[in-house]
Image 1 (cartoon, helix red, strand yellow):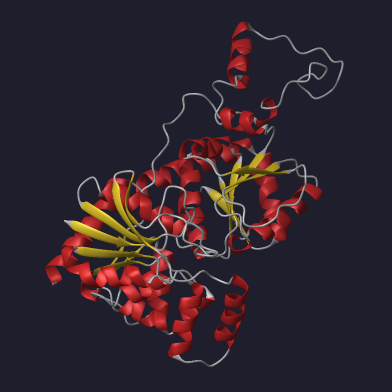
Image 2: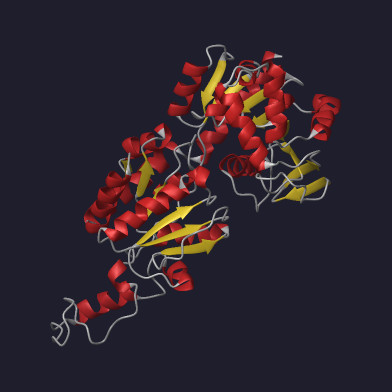
Length: 437
């Protein structure tokens, strides 16, 4: 089967939830099918500047065809226009103007799709929000599958998106929360709908225990095990000494490589993804600072692309963009992973943390994140600053709670997010869409 996948950005360096999801799915489908990704030359979603070269490429076994955007985005002007259109009567033409201003605006991609759509058995559009999906779905709706990645946000109330959710041959959801939201918001939908989810690889269960935070810092020879100076340490058996050496080993301890590289000692709170106000990062820093002022002892490490300034505080560390392997090490090193975004249709960060056996602390304004916590019993959720502080204190103070949450999280991912199950659902949807024609 030849599968065409349409997405606004694509690449191993591209950070973004729907883009990352698209790449994971494309790479696995490519093992069984002829997969071609149609996308723009943009790497940055803020400006949509053409940074990748036009034409054909191949990334991790997937054929990729890029087209140049006609415009870059003036973010300030777009935000002003968005405020107006969300709060005033307007026309469909105004909404199309909004779509063009939002970007990416890429007429060559749509023209190529119109000329060549017959060569594809199925067209898969990732994320409802952007012009390649809104305009591209018009080319051959019956052949099209929408992976909507929808959540409650102002833009989804615009009338142009009614067509996006009514025209495709099928809609794929990532969670039950997303499906319920779309069903409540868009009564007119295709008959074929499916919660496909996403596959998450379970890291190999390590035979050694998670590194205790109190042994990750360089030892102070003048301080005994009970924290008081000038007191003799209690006698230890040979077995106890051997166990202590194993626990403190920088070779064996979980996450030790990441901690050593970034000089991180003690309890660690980790965030990963775009470091952006829209992802809740400003609020996260405010809440975490309140936790520290209230006596909390931890470091907040942020990994990903920095799209906002960070305060110069000793308890905040910027880890930068990490490779997939380094990201896995970071998730293992964390005492807790925090997911502050109020707008999520899945949250791969939460699922990857749970798969690593690391508890999560998530924003209660996201129904999807709350669903993960409740169904997995692998984390806690907060609705405001005080709840954030108290939840973080509870997790940090109770090692047995952390271990229990970690075990629950691994079991949840293992039961519900296996790649063989997810790919089987895509195969059935593709077959039904093709047979319906």
